[in-house]
Length: 343
Image (cartoon, rainbow, N blue to C red; front, top):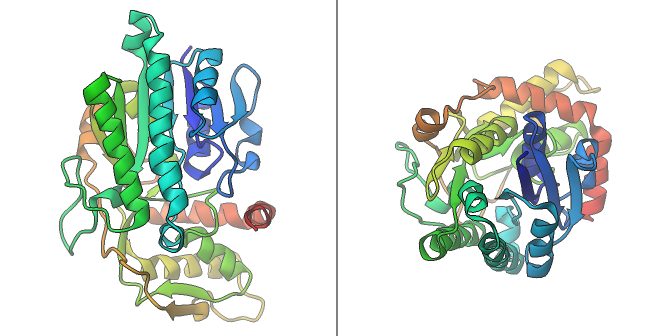
């Protein structure tokens, strides 16, 4: 049985990956420091001794990563652990350097040591998959797409540290022959996303009758992929991807930020109308734009489709958004709990 050590798996995307991997019969080991973005409640229903185990640990802890890898005889490591919020990185970049750069370095070194102890057959089967973002490529104008061949041009402390981590992973492959794969994705949305990101923030603020803050004029464009589709793509890359290669995953669903917010309002008008009879879009307010706000992201994931057989369950952004809004309505206690933990 494949045994996958998944770092950062108590977070948004990592917990979705755990569910997909478990459904396919893989044994998983969740390794998470449970910082403000990681919550035991995200993976509590997945935990099952011998099938899905949990270890509390930081990727900067070389000894603990190495010992955990040895204890469970892992056959793959998938790295989701990262600081990932752009606004937070602008206000305080140090944790991003510590986790995304120093943490990835330490994780790679522990993995290199563990890999050196494996048999030749185990080495052939082993993989280290590093999950990254399309933000490392900078921004696009009104046309064009990011691909695996796009140059790196990060514009925020967050994207710069993720770019640095991508380069470290590549270097450990080129220099030490560590069997790595890198994935880059567009904006994720779906259940269990911390309400500091656009989609869950708009949903939770609207349900509380609070203002819906939109940067600038809301004209910046993002490509949206449902987290479950992204998780399945990562599993495909792990199972079928070529060592040393990069695979991009997108949703083929470009939307202006204001369009996203208005769509959320429209869904809520139908499924959870305001008590005062007003429309949710009356709560929209425009705020000062983010510093260095990238204009547009969009991904061409033809390589993943052709080489991995990647397909999206949610063919339209609207289908996935309906499911997401419904989840947050049904799980208000989850939102309250994670926001309290963040404090």
